[in-house]
Length: 229
Ligand code: DC
Image (cartoon, rainbow, N blue to C red; front, side, top):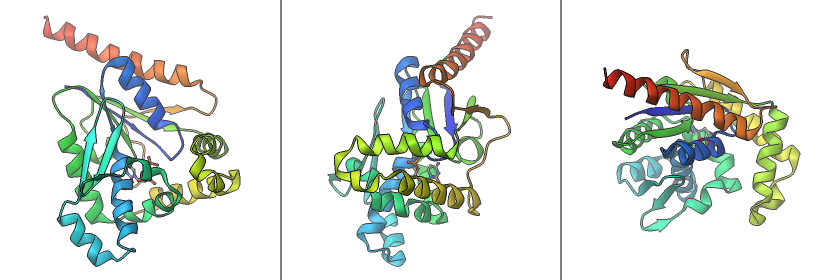
């Protein structure tokens, strides 16, 4: 079993890259942000009342499913995957992700999600905190303007959220999240010492997928060589 992780700030292209690599190299895909977003839907539903929220976390009202290229989230019996990218979740997810009670629970879910097959997981603290033992670690970055441009395009493709997709709004939301995610006490966004940094500002999408896929193939070849010796 091999674990590959991709960490980096919002909008650096982690999800699309990890999904493409998962398909190409035959890995399971795990989106850790989807878990934090699922907890945020619950937090919003409970009107930001922390006591009820921590109680609900203990009752395990959320359930997560990781398919080859999509991570699905259920609240009680209903699927909430579509709601995960809504503006109200974007606005509150960094606050929820800074709560130690939530981070502990998400780490448990992530460790459960890793099965017998090779997987690629993406997030902020996977290489540093959740899977320090991962065989391959990448840290994806890109300029703030470029990340905002990509996020805006993604949001515009979802008609219902188009009013919130003005460039300036998207950029401010990314910037705010970066600040909270990087400066929080618990597991801040940080490049692991042994992670390979890829600045994707002017790297083509195909090229970044190729770099990661080739690294996976190299590890697989080394492993099969050492097994046959
Ligand atoms: O990758 P994303 O935009 O879906 O992540 C949503 C939020 O979740 C992000 O602002 C920070 C948080 N997050 C985190 O703190 N640690 C992770 N491993 C993944 C996400």
